[in-house]
Every structure is written in structure tokens, then in C-alpha cells.
Length: 424
Image (cartoon, rainbow, N blue to C red; front, side, top):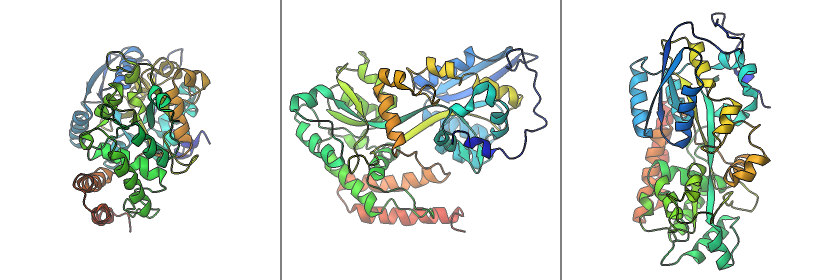
């Protein structure tokens, strides 16, 4: 159901939400206003930050500050925790949204979404994305773009070897082994603890039928399904470049783009690098495919993610004005123009025309439809990820007992969740 967000709106619109509307139905500030945005930086976020500047309501100036993810997280946490009004709008990633919303640092957007649905056509955004920005029954963010992990593969190398694109994990292992040479690795994976390893681990765990937690929120990243996922990772490590335990997204994408690996499990945020002559020596030779599954047609070894924008609970500007400033940059027209920088979130744009131009988006959309999941968005997940992936990384690097390491990590993480009140 495309308008599930409507159910999240408790009661009618807030009576205090009064605005001055122009003839176009867009807010017009009655005096000069400055609205400040703090954001992470990459191509899509640069585009949407500029779009906020270019599409700001009359008399509104948008000041943008873009930085690395780590610096954004540190700076935004410091500002919000001190109830600073320095930033009105923030880039948001759902796992961080959960932490920020849990602390009361973000403004619920339910009433504004309901109020301006006809202006911004929020029904065009699918339910699974609204779910990603929902915490404790309220929506705290608006998505701007999304992505998924895919299999990037050198079509020319596969053709020369007489091999098909692998569709199952066993085929992936076999194909990587056959393509592995002294000059080119068969595959590359992001294995750097903890964040990048968590992405790779989740991809394979999902394909093998596992998940981080069960329905009662007990850790299950040490389950038989999870251990099967680790077995596949270990097999593929034999065909990865040396030093892969230090590889993040940059290194993994670079290995394929520079002809150092024939395949890679890589997120679509990096697909543009493959055909960029400034970054790639294999322009026009890399294909994008839905990741293999344990059995053909099953859940792929993939995950999806999304980024968007939220409003600080401590903004001193009119929240209605801030909301419209944010959403003016997230319309269908703006997203269509920005599709070259990031996969749109509006279903009206996820069509055959776009997919013909962007096979990476087509493969990502297919992966999302058949079982790719987002990382758990709970406040405790960062700590759980750090504990579990440090244990897994140590076991993979040192050849020690993975099951024992993950069992110990699961016990520690269960205590964290218990202390947080999940089992009361």
C-alpha cells in the first residue's frame, strides 16, 4: 500500500501550522531567512545540497556545509546533543536517524507530510523507504536517493573465459576461482571492519537465510545460516586481492575500475566510476547484475540503503519553512535531473526509460524487490556491529574459530539489548 505513511499521522494537523502561501502554493518568507544544512559529501549529496540552494523559497538563503561521513556524524551529534540550533537541516542515514530520534534530536515530520502531500506527492515514494525513516511510529526524514549492493563483473573477461554471470553463490565461488590469475583477482570484497565488513557479511547472510536478530531481538549472527555466509566469504577470500581485509568501498571499486579484479560485490554509489575515464581503465567493459543467491531465484547477496534529510528539533526557524526548503529539493523534477548522481526514490522515475539508461539501477531495483534488506536501524546497532564485526574480522584474519568468536559476541550483544530494555 503506497500511502502507509498516512497511518502514522496521529490525529489531524497541528492547529499551529499556519504559513504564508504564494500563488504557486509554496511558502514565501516575509523576511530574509538563513537555513543551514550539514551533510556528508558524495555526488548525490552534493547535487541535493545545491538543489536546496537553487530551489529555496523566496527570501530564503540556504548555507551548506559538506564533509566526510565521520566528521558529519561527530559534528551533528555534538550539536544536537547540546541542543544547538546551528544547523536546521541535516543529511540523515537511517541507522543514525534511529539514534538521533531516540534522543529526541529530530523533529517528527508526520503532520507536514500529510499537509503537503498534494504539493510534493509523497505517495510517489514506496512504503519500504518510509519505513526506513520511521522510528517509534513517527517519520523523521524524507529520502532523496537509494542504492544497493550488486555484482559488478567484467563482461569481456567472462566472455573470453566462456563463462556466464554467476547466479548462485556456488557459481560465484567457482567463477571467481576460474578467473583468478597472477595479474587479476577473481573477485574483490569489502572486508574492512567494522562497517564495510558488516555490509559484506549482511549480503551473504541474507542470501543464506539468516539475519542479525530473531523476532524477539535475540542476536542470530552466529546462527548456522550466518556461519554458512562466513564459509562463502572465506572461500572467496582465496580469490580476492592481497590486503582485502583493509578494503572499503573505495578500494573495492578501484580494484575493478583499474582491472585488478574481474568481479566485485559493490554498491551502486560506485557504479559511475566504472565508466569514468578519469577513474577507470575498463570503460564500457563492466556489467551490473543482481547479486547471486544461495539458489537461483532466491534472496540475493545484497542489501539496500538510502539517505535523505531531517530537521533538527532545535531549529529556531519556522519548521514549516524549513520543511518546504528541504522538500523543494526533493520533487520529481529535481530527482529526475539528479538521477545521474543517485538512484531516485520516486516510483514514477523508476521506469523502463531510466533502467535502459542505467542497468545498475535496474539491477538494484530488482534486488530490492526480491529480498535485499536495509541494515537494522536501532540505536544500539553501531555498538553491536562493532563488537560482532571485530570478532569476525579477527577470526577471518587469524584463522581462528569463527563460531566461537561469534557466539561470544552474540552473548555480549544480547546483554546490551537486555540492558536497553528489549526483553522486558
